[in-house]
Picture (cartoon, rainbow, N blue to C red):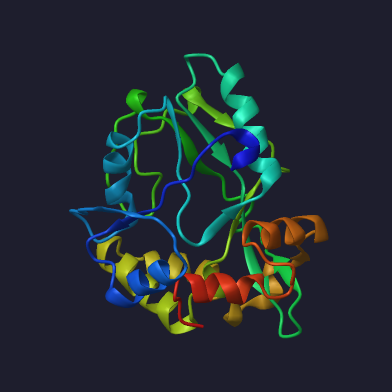
Length: 233
């Protein structure tokens, strides 16, 4: 973040358990508590925006990591956006780790580039806390699509165990009936690996992730991420 003169802030909701808080304190990571009126992260976005003084807000969840190139591209992009644009969407790559440790990302047609609207001119959007959405009303005419070479990497498959992902699908299904079936291939890649047509994550991006986590061991950054946030493996 130093390269773009920007400071990241970590927000937790009031449902965060004691073990997660203990892990964050042990890692000396600063965070802010916000009351969440809902059982999903989209319920926090409006409250995060209310705590933000900048014109733009970039939201990343705890199982996502941007590359340095993506952050620099974002900083450069903001200066050139017209007032007609109130949000920008980034491609999101779902990352899988093979038994040998190699990192791959899905190229499955049903996932595609999985564009996520995460850069928000937050005073110019209406936040709507609905699970598994951008968390605010999106007008396609006012949204900028960032080139796919500047993605966000998604580590849900790595930092959450299969059982936790199954529980997540069941939770989605209670709110959005049919979601468990619709998204089973997304959240349970173990059941359909061939369909994901995995491709290697570039060495450049792996090194970038390692630098983000302050470690020289490029093979250990995922474990460090899991330990830092106390996610079950």
